[in-house]
Image (cartoon, rainbow, N blue to C red; front, top):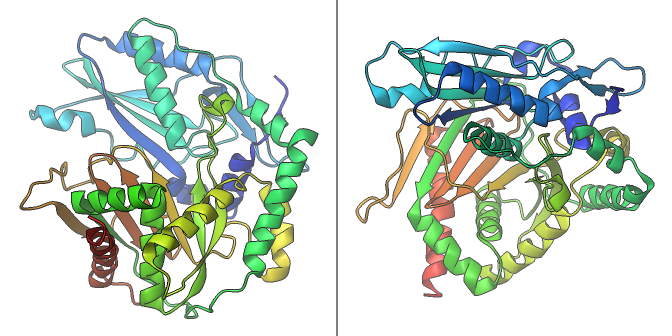
Amino acid sequence: MSASFLTYSQLSAWRSIEPFPVDQHTPLFVTKVWPLPAELTVRHVEDAFTRLAQLHGALRTRFELQHEDEPRQRVEADAVVPHEIHELIATDDTEAPLSMPDTFATRPFDLEREPAWRVCIVTRDGRPQSVVVCCHHMIADAWAMRVLREDLFTILAGAIPPDAPEPGELAEVQRSTAWARRHEATMRHWVTAIRSGVDPGVPEDDEPRPRLWASLESVTALDAARVLAEATRTSVHSVVLTAFAEVVARQSGRQRFRVGLLAGNRSQARWRRLVCPMDQLTPMVYARQPDRPITETIQHVHRAALSAYSHASFDVDELAAELEEFGFDAVDGGMDVFFNFIPVEPAALPGTGPFRATDAEPWRLTVSDQGRNNGVPTFLKVSAGAYLLLRLQESRAGSTAASMEQHLMAVQELLRAEASLIR
């Protein structure tokens, strides 16, 4: 098959890691553990993954990253499933779904010579217990991993998944004349956000900075966010984004700054089954008005976020040329803080066990120096399901466990206090 261009999201992912050696690409790996139904054999699982690779071209893709003008990708005809089998020796059944070889999720991929994914079939007494799937972000994002899981289990159940588009199809559409107007609008949106003027932040020095992750799992925050979303006719996403930005403004003293939003770009039905990264960064300017009621601010942020998300698919190389005059690169785009909202059930945090809220303990706060490094100073990732999970990463001078706990608790208290005025 002939080589095709990368999708815009793939190109963004590649430009973000291109300067670094392959052993530093780990933050762009997406790893999931899926417990398996009983009564399967290893052969059943292997065959199912082969059929999965036949269905989704991303699993058969090799990249040509040194192409003369810009990188390309080529989908191979044969489905090869890079996998290994890990036999459990532990006696505790509860550990089975989480067990895998130590280096499985961190071993580098050779994107030009091998598939950008791997599978570990975890067995006990030779019977499959779970599978661990690790994909490079060049071929999958979190949404794509859900597609892969659904299709794998459909195959294991003896059914046939629906057809799926190929990454090359999206890449072709993104470079078509029909897409040109949308791309031009996106460039204007970025330049407007950069030119809008923001309060200067505290200059960062070159000293090593701590990298910490703080997490708040909370029914209290979710209940309050839902009250505010209903009252403002917006969404939990916009309510939490507003609270996060407002706390950043209050704690930093900055009244105007750029928020980098991570957009999933899956609104069109045609691409919802595409196994390929589609997420890209888009800027939103948060302009604080202390005298404005928070409910009005939520509505303003909601409209601003919707506009930003509609301008979140772009050629990062063209954007780099636009941003060069402002002194920014196109990887972080001059953003001050980053926000990513994922409307799925939160996953249990490593080392803490599942969160089960009670009337006595409706929330749990934890801090760790271990987590996925997004490479930016401040990043809040939010999941919403039975409770709200706010996972804050900071790598700023002066960041401490106490300051990050204070930040998350300030977000929760803002939500709780404002919701109490409505109830």
